Image (cartoon, rainbow, N blue to C red):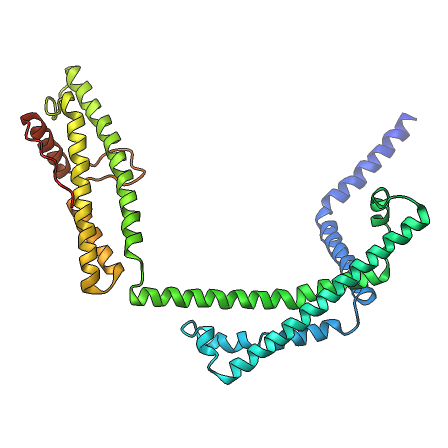
Length: 331
């Protein structure tokens, strides 16, 4: 008995092993079979539920509605829709697009109202027949087969949405993008960038950089002071007294903001001379970067090792130590 049982188990194991070795073939065949069944169901649904000839009619209307986009596509980005309307063919194609869009929306509205009316009538007759509130039978009715009129309206609505409105909406979106790119390109050519907005953005960024520089400078000065107090050799030992730290930080911030005011004034003057906000801003930004050596970038963890920067910090400490502290007036 046990021998027969073991032989049956060995036979089952051998069959499973053969299936495991051929699983890649079964997997490909199963995928093909599943998609074949789905394709057959889709064809059956298309011929049973949709209106005959509707797809061909919708594709023809879409082709006529998209003639204006096909005409504007080879022209390029330098011609917007108002400029293109001066051409007679573009005007005619715009009229075609308007006519077919209005007709399509009217047909879709009619189908939606008809489907809604069928659903309402279905609910009313179901209540008269069963004397049960619709909410109690909603799930059961949804699981069953719907009336053919409702299924036909739903299928036609899906075809209208997929074959007509998606293409027309995409074409309108592309035309809007083209028009925005044209306006952006013309503003760049004419220098139409708003200089006050650029200046305000730079000022907000410089304020954040000043706060970051103060934090990093305090951290570095604390490390230098601790190394000098512990007896370790330091190049800057005794050069940065603790009592002058606050004064030096205020002096440095005031100096950076004064340079920023000069850069803003230069940008406004250059805007009038060059007639380009972008050129004026880049020129003033270059002058500001050259005059504020060592100003950290947002995200830096340490200060720069540039000798000019630390010589300037040392000079600020000497000014604070000698008492010759004069805050620069900002324009």
